Figure 1 (cartoon, rainbow, N blue to C red):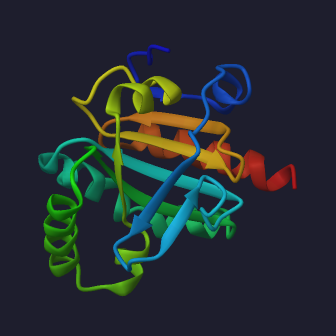
Figure 2 (figure 1 turned 90 degrees about the horizontal axis):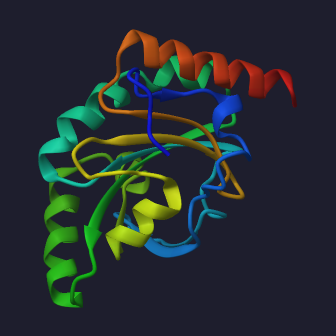
Length: 173
């Protein structure tokens, strides 16, 4: 799947037609809670902010400051930061996770941060993510179906697109 120039996919373009789904994974959040994904994402709708490089945190932050407006539209919405890192040995993972944990003061934010240690190529392929140059933002349901997607930092066009998708989903309940 190649994103258009806007970096946004509508609900109709993504839901059930792409064949892309969030893969079944075991993971741990920064509060050390083991998770079976996607079923352990807490919301009926879950916005995943997927980053591949440390420098992309500032891009993720552009979305985080907007979350209250989206939660107001859809009370069933939950959001998560998903740093994606290649598979590593347990000792290296421990150092990375402790460093991240130490840098995040809020327990709510640590709960929403789930570091994925995966084979990146198959992970990206499962989600239709062409590269690691940008962050990717996916709205999924509990089954892992992609309902909406956008590439890159928050902007008004992407925000309006997500707002419309959430409004359609809440009306259809």
